[in-house]
Image (cartoon, rainbow, N blue to C red; front, side, top):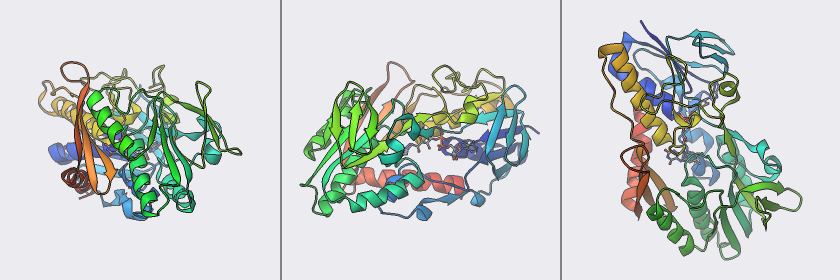
Length: 376
Ligand SMILES: Cc1cc2nc3c(=O)[nH]c(=O)nc-3n(C[C@H](O)[C@H](O)[C@H](O)COP(=O)(O)OP(=O)(O)OC[C@H]3O[C@@H](n4cnc5c(N)ncnc54)[C@H](O)[C@@H]3O)c2cc1C
């Protein structure tokens, strides 16, 4: 029986293990490894930061996974040999016939001076929980939401943060005494689609939220509370909410799997790496799609098809088109969407769905349906 070892139980690893179990049951031996005991949907971190839910309320525990053929192990991967397909963890060694890397992107707050001291990173669950305190203590002034690197999870998330912050400050009666800025190195909110970008820009303008594109923050001065931007401009703030530089997990880099750009290169049809029988999906790859759960999930579906055709009947799996809907929470119970396609026919493109209650219901169902599918 083939041994499939999947490293990382996030969007990519959970979807792939579910799919293999669904299709092959006990006919395949899947070992799913993650250092954590639980999974958290990306957007739930905003709930944690804004005090809507406690960290414990957003966790789905891996111990609840009961799927034929799948064994979950809570272990930290310490080395990967992609030639031998051998993985060493803090608890032992795993040999694979097929190895899939789905370890996501790590945050590197140290990459930008001053961020650890004054940046209030909110992209991890612990960071989001910690950012809640300064947010609650904020009594008016300037809040800067700063994207610190060109690749980051969920391109709409900085804007969602701004919209939800606007709503909270209004509720607390301190919005008029506050300024909100979103700074990003990108030239537009969603560079591949003028329509989606314009939709987001209109909603920012309607709430008097300042947007500074092409503005990469290179350092924070924690004593003076001043952000320095790459081109020399500065911006004083009272509260900085940082989206730190993202990097591939160190264990992936030291394994020799990454390319010069720091991410794992893959064949876009199969998600095979340069090493035979080693695949990679999700945020850890350099696939030209945004870093987002919907894409990691779509890639995992494709790898599932590729592996099933290999393990079962042969033939080609349908190509991955990089098509997805990214939901955008505008606050007030309204959610819009960016319907995008990156790898289909023609150049990457996208259309915009304006905020609506229907969108909010769809986003809710998106999260609920994934947790139901992966955790039963
Ligand atoms: C605030 C916010 C909002 C978001 N909103 C959305 C959204 O609305 N829609 C959307 O699609 N996406 C959203 N995302 C992005 C989404 O969460 C990620 O892009 C997605 O989780 C990537 O999936 P992945 O499988 O590649 O990696 P991950 O889901 O990050 O999984 C990687 C796993 O690898 C594990 N791991 C890492 N290193 C090791 C190691 N050495 N040993 C063992 N385990 C290890 C980690 O613990 C983790 O569980 C959001 C993200 C954030 C932060």
